[in-house]
Image (tube, rainbow, N blue to C red):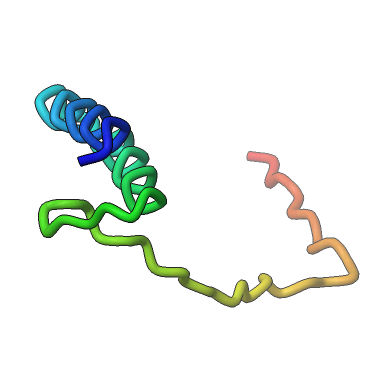
Length: 70
């Protein structure tokens, strides 16, 4: 096995023990770039697209409410 892959696997094990999921995902991405795949690796992120629906735009400001004297 490639020494770089072995080093990344050791690094990944340390991140799992310390409960650092974001770092584990980063190491998994580096392993995938090197062509390594394993069933315990985090799933490859899928590309999601969304459409943003803007709020209602108004050309005027709403009326100000006056305080009641009381």
